[in-house]
Image (tube, rainbow, N blue to C red; front, top):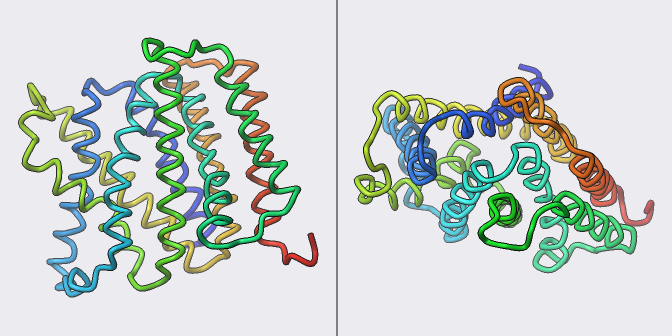
Length: 285
């Protein structure tokens, strides 16, 4: 399959998540538990079937940290979608490339130029514009949801930086497994408390959707990364913002407000040009 089509398909799959979280009648604890456990179980069965478990004995400590960070990312992700509008949530989630740029300049010693610093400032101004109608209060659902999604974005950035620092020691399928493994193992003993009053049909749907987004979506994306430049893949992944807004509009009848449009445009403009400055040779900037 064409790698560009693979990434666009991945963004369509991920884009349905916000509407799914709003529509399904499950608490955050259940959604997060299923999201972490289902991909772990599915991939473990796959590796057992393929007799490819040897990689478990050579797990770098950095991938363990990725798995732990992913627990926070997933929980904050669902809190974000549950408490604020899907449009605001997905736009704030896509501040992660900004955090990647900041972390790369600190930990990976990548050069940060003045235009890059200006774009980072513009992106953070965009996050303020999106949130300007909310009250600074933990009793305000919008505020809680937006803060949760920013934390999820920060965790996504940390994962990207760690994966980049780790290199190609493991296949992308193995990395997807490690991304979820710690969370799956952690929630397993506590399922009785995390999923009170279990509803078989919604849980089965959630498990299927978790495998669909967590395994198929990431497999398509990582497969494409092997064939095209990472800058192209990252740029195309922003299509998730558009697909998410389309799903939320048709399925949830959410409206895009002026501050979402303005703030989102500022963030996406910053992210797109940050990719340009990070991929163009320094002497050409």
